[in-house]
Length: 121
Image 1 (cartoon, rainbow, N blue to C red):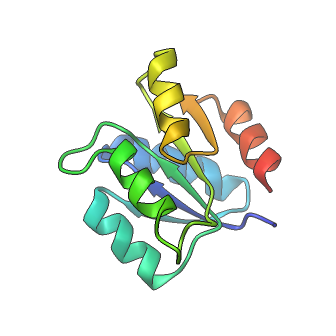
Image 2 (cartoon, helix red, strand yellow):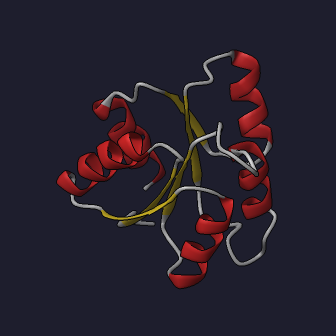
């Protein structure tokens, strides 16, 4: 599967701008969401090829949202990379248990993120 459309879910405007800029410079089409409600609205509008998911957000956190998306038959095939400041091994393991395909910690290194996206595509 070729990854072209990416949904970035993060409650930080700074992080959304940084990720959008980085991904667009690398040729991806980017949509953003600031919370779980936004994310599901974006999913319904256009199914992405990949979701980059923050963990710490108001309301439903990234772990819960990842679990909800990966258990939904409509979106279960969309890979999710957790993209978070939570850098403990237990967080990584928990994220993967919720259905994430990969896990990257902030601050995000552009080359590491691109390598992870390429590995999924």
